[in-house]
Image (cartoon, rainbow, N blue to C red; front, side):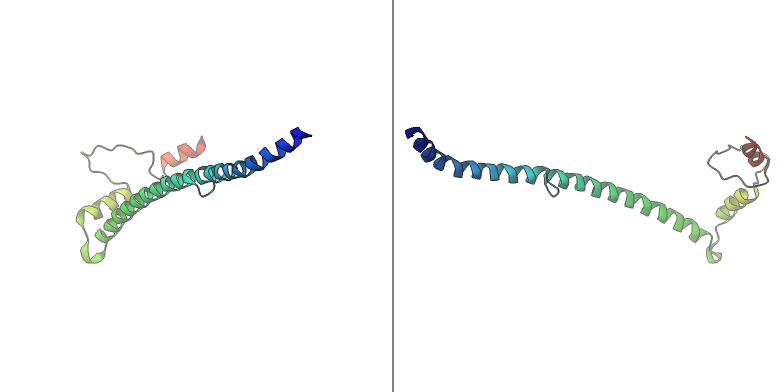
Length: 120
């Protein structure tokens, strides 16, 4: 009986600090690994950096395309751009030109290479 009274007295002094330490550990864990914790913040920071890099790439591509379109406007036709477009559209090359085929180029229907690829 004396042992039970002693356990109750000691438990009264241990339960409060034990609950406090448990609460601190719980909140510390979620501050690091929770949905809005430190790890989630670092991951979000990486995703933002990747998105900014992608936005810069797209902006550069857009500026390049806008420049090419500007060169094709009737008010400011660039002879080099006209010749480049004519060569691509009508598949034209001068006699001394060296032609390097590009597999990424879109093949036009009715051409010999298109028919070869379609027959495979």
